[in-house]
Each structure stands twice: as structure tokens, then as C-alpha cells.
Amino acid sequence: MDILDGIYSSRSVRKYTGIPVTQDELYEIIKAGTWAPSGLNNQPWRFVIVTDKEIRLKLAQLTKYKKIIENAPACIAVFIDKDAMYNDLKDHQAMGACIQNMLLAAHALGLGAVWLGEILKSANEVRTLFELPEAMELMAVVAVGHPASGAKAKSNRKDILEVLLKEI
Image 1 (tube, rainbow, N blue to C red):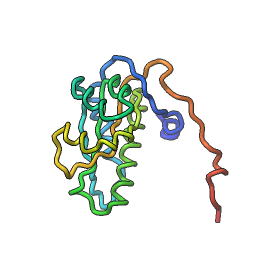
Image 2: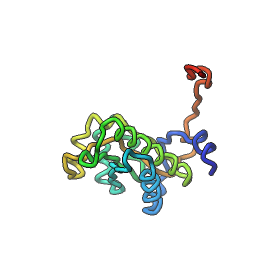
Image 3: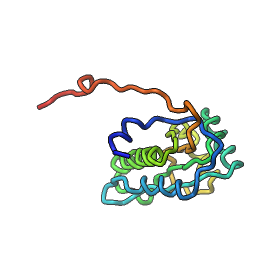
């Protein structure tokens, strides 16, 4: 898939078939995330793959978007390792790039994914559920699955001239 085609055709997918996502596909998504740029190449990202239904159901209770997590065959919780950070702003920007790479990788693999951020209100509970140390700060949960028919939402963007402040 051409990169620009992938960027322009990718959509948040919130409904999935019951087909499982393979470990190889999940690893490929995470690998793409790890290729995001990070300051000093510190790579502060850490991941938890959740395919166990019982754990997914517990995770789902921690967000108002619980139906998405309940119905996704896999979720990837994305954490920043506070012990690996060197600059708060730069490291958090790197996490956004990591998650975007993951979403594009899922799309390139023919999967659907959605970045769930509302769950951050329950970050401590998520960390406790996974029995992780306090140094792991939740950044997002990415739900992943094979898209159900009609699962991709239509989207549009503002014209470039609406967002361009200046050409100097």
C-alpha cells in the first residue's frame, strides 16, 4: 500500500468480525509503532497485548466505549515508560507518532483499529489490572480486529487553505 493512499484511506474502525487477529499481525503492528521517531532514540513505548476475553471484559468496564473493547478480538494497551523518558513534551509527542504508526500498520494489514483515549481517565485502574509498575503511564488502548462490513466511518478534512496560516 502506498503511504499516502494508506494515510488518506485509513479510518477509525469500531466494529469487528469474530475472526481472531494473529500474533504475527499484532507483533507487526507493535513493530511499526516502535519505528516511530523518538528524541535521542530513547523509544519510551511499552505495550500490553490483550486477547484474553476475560481480561478484555474487565478492561472494557474502565471506559464508556466498552462495547468496542468487548467486541474487538484484540487490544493493545500503549504505555510510556516514565523511567525511559528524558523530555516530557518530546516523549509524549513520540507516543502519538507511535500510535499513528500502529493504526497505519493495522490498515496496511487489512485490519481495522481505533485509538481509544477516553480510557485514560482510568489509567491507574488499567495499570493495576495488568499488574504493571507505576513507571508505566497509559497513553491509549488500540482496539484491533477484522472490520465488519460497513465498519469504516466516512470522513472529510478541511481544505488546506483553511488550516494554512501563512506561506512566507
